[in-house]
Image 1: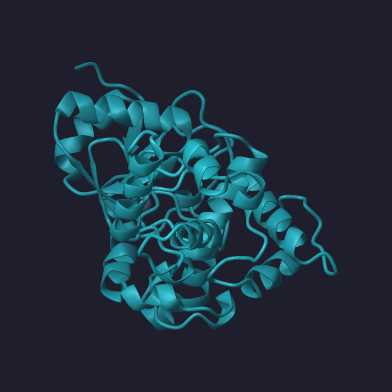
Image 2 (image 1 turned 120 degrees about the vertical axis):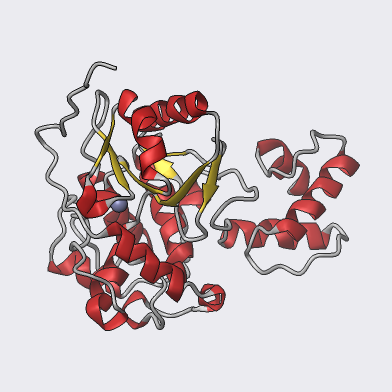
Length: 307
Ligand SMILES: [Zn+2]
């Protein structure tokens, strides 16, 4: 095979981290109970970024409200996802990944994909006290690019990924690959603007300048943000599809759907998490309503639920 030269774009100046060590630590720290944490980012206990999953999901959705399709899910590809990994990439990176996976014809285990600015702030705040190696300040990590993946079996995957413009980082960070071809864009400002806008929607008395820049006010505000998500959520403006995902979809929209199902007489206790039990009840409702039975809450199901 002809050797392909893979280079990062000129604008690329994200910082690398010791990914292997970061997610070994994340795996050890992973805490199912973290999902019940209902305090502010700055006080988050434990060492698992899963404690801010609800806020992370709001941040990803807010980015897509402001900048449509800036991040797309690759969960439907032939992948095995680590429980803490958000399976999001920029669209051209996902397309290339899909080709590599299809060519090799086997399941790829993904340990880390997109990391939200809230997760990065937690890692940054905790740092060595939680055993994390040096981590980039929020916005600077290469896992905030939407172009990065950490996987298992890097040796086996390398030729397939390389052919489709995914560059292996090298022996210093073995699980890490970056997508380096055309169509990749710098999403750093969009990441910051999404948080600043979400904050402003919820704090009209103390707004931030939506300038896409990480500064002291933005850092303080993110630390003062609820790990369980803001009251005014981005899906109030533009609903998201509710379905079984990794990590589990959670939030006020899930709670409202569960409450509506309960009001319709279904046996369900609203908790805001879209788990298997919720999916089963949604299917029952869809069947009884004569609509497509797929366990996915989209426009048709919402229309029937809130008719
Ligand atoms: Zn990595």
